[in-house]
Length: 203
View 1 (cartoon, rainbow, N blue to C red):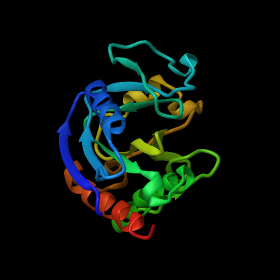
View 2: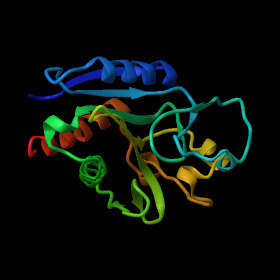
View 3: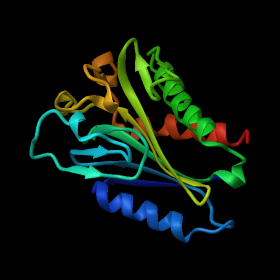
View 4: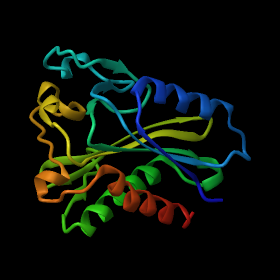
């Protein structure tokens, strides 16, 4: 059973998060998996174990304490967000395997645009040299996942300088447009989602 794909465009972070929680709480073993493709207005999100001291500067950008794993990150227009609402038990998938699927989907997509990138086991996400371009943050509840990945496409990266991205002081970030690739975010979603679905079909 293939996941249902939902193109949500620009949506408020908190509202979308609450909808993911509600979907996960109400689903049963027959509920199809879903993949949500979205962008968010500017927002900092702090994971379950996130430390406030990783927010270096107070700004007008809201800070939301969320229930995914990981530390602090930034979302804004021009960043691709793909949320994976999956029944991991039905897929016979563990969280480490899902993290790898999401990382590899970004790596494969970037390779299609001539960009070499890689993952780091000790620091989940996708990197070009030492600069981070993609992040992964997940929540597992009732053996189902929500949250997912973010991939920087063409956005204002300045707010990343107001935080220690993902809890790493001095970590630099990059995006596709800085690598010479100009593409609409909704177009970028296509190969990323395709790669995720292709990987899930193997389980």
